[in-house]
Image (cartoon, rainbow, N blue to C red; front, side, top):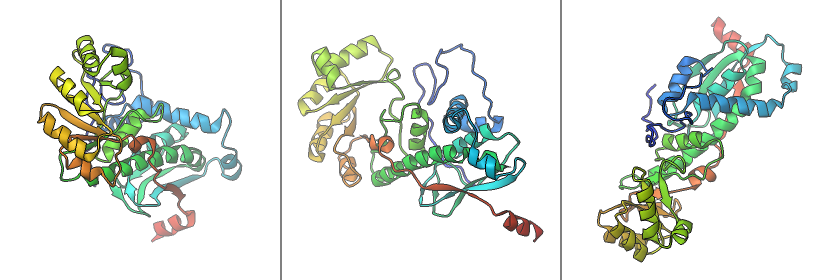
Amino acid sequence: MSTPDLPLAPSGPDGCGDGCGCAAGAGAAEPECGLDPALAALLAEAGLDPVLVEDLAHLAIAEDLDHGVDVTSVATIPETAVATGDFTAREDGVVAGLRIAEAVVSVVATDDFAVERHVDDGERVTAGQPLLSVTTRTRDLLTAERSALNLLGRLSGIATATRAWADALEGTRARVRDTRKTTPGLRALEKYAVRCGGGLNHRMSLSDAALVKDNHVIAAGGTAAAFEAVRDAFPEVPVEVEVDTLHQLREVLDAGADLILLDNFTPVETEEAVALTDGRALLESSGRLTLDNARAYAETGVDFLAVGALTHSATVLDIGLDLRDADADTAAGAE
């Protein structure tokens, strides 16, 4: 099984990547991770913080149990029963979050469990295709089921939506980028899903890059003034400037901006902006964007399309967990 290339998030000002959990900065003791080391390594290779994933898994399960037990599973399933469950796609899409779903099951499992990985994050899957098989205590598997599926379906939906945009831009220089319009607490995971779908990440937080928007312009007394204030205060931080008109574009180009957001420009206006810029800065389109007009914007020559809908409006990909029939497994083993 081949592993698709999943670009990691760019390093921040302190060298930390996507999902960094070292809030105290360089030199701080790394928190211990209770996940299986091999699983933790896979998460880290994907640009995710294993400690963050483990914490989110515990949070999801704690919310579901609410200091109690899974009363349905405890009442209907013998304590020692073991089963294999298959996480299976119910519809076509792009999968993301399989190792995260695995982590959720692992924090519930009271006994050792075995996994069989059929696909990798970032792969296109079809309805009926098995994605991940887990064998563990039946009660634990069903207790973890909904939390694992909630995260897996959400992230796969984002990856699927992103792939649709990436496909629409194929053959142009433009790449689709996400925004900070993410679910609180899930930003690192949702931006990872964007990468799985072939998109790029914009800034991870308010501290690793600057985006001068209309309210900053009002407060600073002008577009160029706002840009220069940020550049002077934080010279090492990338600065993007939002403009609404070609006049503002000329101002920030003269001020030396090298990344400019064209807000609510039409395709015709965007083409004029590309010609005016003439390669002096990278340009990003935002607002008015839909899958139907994405190609028209991309063909103007802009570098990025900023699409908040990748994370704030993505439809969950339908994925289910199916327990294997014990009798069928026994019969298959006898053959």
